[in-house]
Length: 585
Image (cartoon, rainbow, N blue to C red):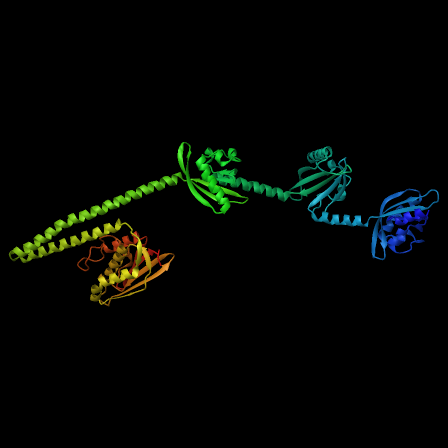
């Protein structure tokens, strides 16, 4: 008996004996150890949480009538810890002595874990259903944000066929049949009508050890919409690639094709599906494959893109292509190939035309040079013979005859000047642009020295900025300054001393030089006419010259990669704006 009592003292379960009034007549030591009070002679109901006393009272009569009660959850008060102890209780009345024997097992930790699981389940976006082999709903778990379309208390006890319409019930039962047969997880997708639209769901049916099934259901409406959007974007991207003139190939470091996208111009010549997975040497000639592989591996190693050109036959014709190799993630490279055959042919044709134009310019320059000499020779003879006639027979000529002879001599000299200017213009038009560093200050200084006497005649002054050094042709730049400054002196006003200002500014790699004078100027609507060869705003009796100087200046600026503009106001002066590319500061 002592051993039996010792055994009872070691048990963690609550054991006690009650009389028919529910008074405790015997307990094992666990009661006193756990509650820290003497419970002998107390009613069992006084030890139970108030809310659970109703449960015990509801079954008490059945216990007195001899019906055993099992697995009833009641909470014992724990006054010392101001808490309670969850217990799983079994009660049975003995027919021999009319005592009620009670066994209670502490399930507090299990209940806490269940509560924690409940909290987690309520925070998840899933619904949890438990079903038996007859497809009847035993339990439903859900949170506030994942309630079923039908309230949970209306689902428990119903079968799948009673919950779902026939067209859905059958595939769901088939999925459950498969799960029970294979004892493996089965997934099924279906749609149900929501408040304002159709909703998509995904159910995972999981078999349990007790022959039941747990269905984890998640609404995937947004996911389905996102998938459809991704599919549409992929289709649009595919159409985009197919509309481009390029071939896109993704390679790994060993030269195997991982993916390929081809524009419509490549599709007739590129069996895309056949190339994926192949090594580059399997579809390209050996020399070209080695060239590609070398660039691919170098780009992957250095992470620096490269570009190169290659030729390859296509449709029985040799094509010219441009390849750009760009680094990608995961030790990969993307090669973008474009057929540039048409551009190549156009470039070759343009180079051929440029060579022809250069040859033509040289021929024109040679022709102009020869023509000028051939034209000037008879003019010189005419002038020489008239001068001799005047010396020998001048006294026999009338006054009118002498006047005619003077006019012939004057006309021949003008013709000589015109031919010289025409030769200069043709030379600038076809000049070879020999580039060198040009100090504009030095060239301007030399020009001012050359025109110093003419400047003094007009009582003129020149004020200039310090100009930069540029890359250009010294001869042409000096001629440009010479012509523009001479032009300013020629058209000086008689009303005031001549003032010439030379200013400059640098903007966006271009140098702008303005030559501003206070001469007679010109009307604004003539600002383009003055640059046309042989066009004059004044008669040759008012101002000498052939009208080719400004045209020559604009051609010089064109040769130097720039431009020349003019702005004027009658009787107030003119401004000539030189624009040149600034390659040296």
